[in-house]
Image 1: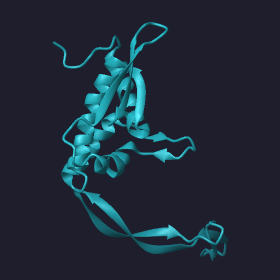
Image 2: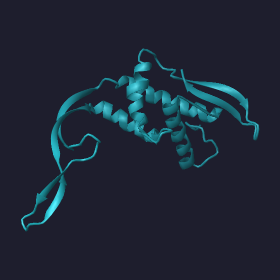
Image 3: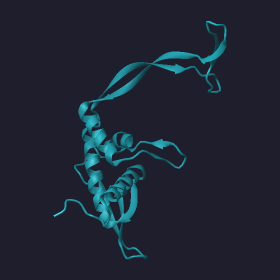
Image 4: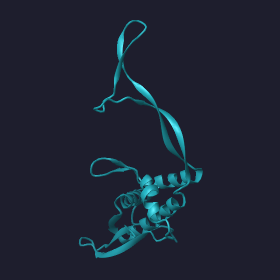
Length: 174
């Protein structure tokens, strides 16, 4: 007996569909698809949310010195004219040293993040801004379901699709 549904596709296509649906669910909060796909994605995302809840606060912070370009009032880089040994003049970007606080994942949180990157792909919103669904899992979804013991998604059946009669469903977070 198979562990996963075959869904009538080669394994690479099936995996691509499941990854795309998982990413869409995490970014948008709901997705409309067939019942078989919804059940598969539901089990995948439930496991990812459980990992995110478990590892939500498992990180430390660290101060790091970084070199950044100085910006003027309009947001443009400040250029400085320099002279080389042979007398040529050229412009360079003026830089400043800053101290920045960054988060450092613990080993188990890093492993959970890597498991999530297998299923969740980086995407863009309507304005074209890049969205990392793994960060969204840790920052928004995990705190929302912190006290809950499983059952993070629900499948709502809609009925048969008009074209081929396939059973349709909406998959959403509870």
